[in-house]
Image (cartoon, rainbow, N blue to C red; front, top):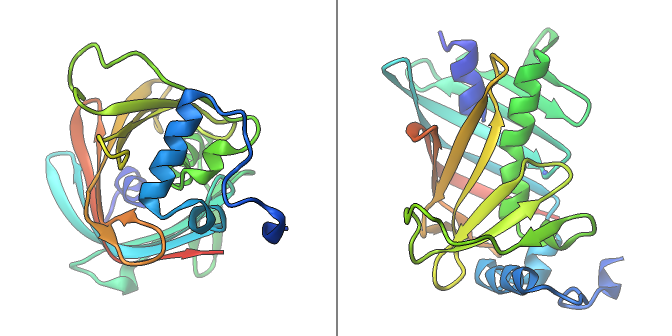
Length: 241
């Protein structure tokens, strides 16, 4: 059986009148996000997306074990997310589902929904927020603050550019870009789902992307406190308006 924490980790949102680029008195960080959007498919393609769907295979590293899973996920950026996961050794008949919304979170079964603990909901909501930030266009909305932070003093990301994002529905996050302003990774701190502590989290995104109008990474990995906990490779991806 997949343990609850392991399951949750695996699971771990008037257009014609708009200009082709947002009309902003942009800061340096905002102009950099615009550059990154050009690399990721362009403003028009990214701005129209309000639903992300993907399927793939993942590897969960937990308690000294490696679990191979299948995943099917739908995300409405910063609104809600539903993720299905199953052990590949058992197949989709063993699927477990999780739904996270702005109002709460539930484990979903064919017979109904069971509320998740508040700490788990807070953790998962912050986890799913990364996909809205990866779209980039939502970062140019009102109430979002973009900053160019100092260079990484530890030298871990030497040669990469950094933009700090303060979004009202996401944890404070630093996005990492390569020299061509391709999104390379992200860093933030999220609540520990089973306690009162915090987890330093790091995402890494592949340069290989899925086919389609927007360039979405084919592979990603997640580290918690410097330890690899999850890897995902997509087999299908849709960005829907």
